[in-house]
Image (cartoon, rainbow, N blue to C red; front, side):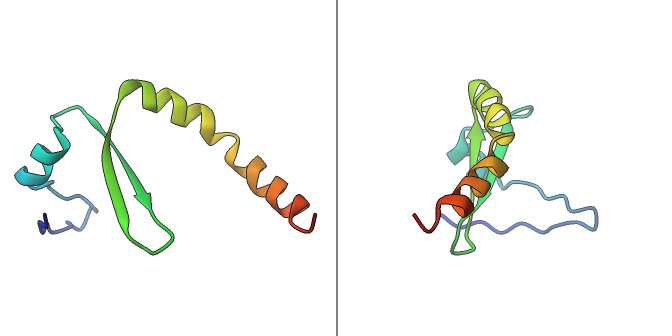
Length: 74
């Protein structure tokens, strides 16, 4: 499915009805946006439990990058 929406000068957009229906999204829901390595953007509706998990995980991400750099040559 493809839908097109315009971005306003404030960086806002309206999520097309068909996309909202596919996501089962309603007013007040949270959406997670992810940019893949290939430059594609994926969006999904976030469950309340997911938000707490993502917040807990967020603080450790820089630590993972440091570990990867430190252990790269092993």
